[in-house]
Image (cartoon, rainbow, N blue to C red):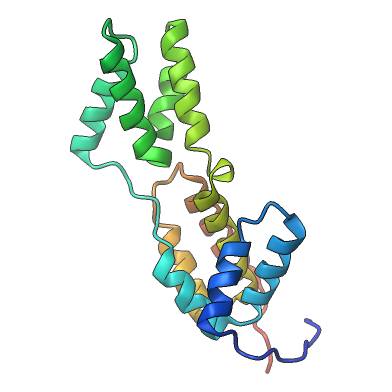
Length: 184
């Protein structure tokens, strides 16, 4: 049983934008308040989040082949090739994590290991404002728990299986499925 809370006035587009910005605030209490406010206003917040959130893309077949080449280039003789390969792997973000982790498990050179670890750190969603915001948005959607929020979580859960956002959305969807139906 949930405790009823007094209704809040619907947030304006300006307030939604401010709350969206607050989700990445260095002040955790400010971010927490933004999560709570957005979760209590699902009629406005869920469409706002839908406009801004996308599932983590899965690697296309040609991206996978290019990724293999870039991983090999991390150990190449040319500095420019190593730099380009590192940048391209970082651009793939969480989609490249499984391949990067696999490459780290093999016995890369010190240079390749340093670059692989840097790419892995760069793809950690908690270390990037956009990634942290997306993870907090999953919390908002789960707390809101209405049909629209559930649909958006289900869409996010269809992203790259190894991505943190995908895993968190899937876990939230499963928890919501176990939640007893609410009575009005």
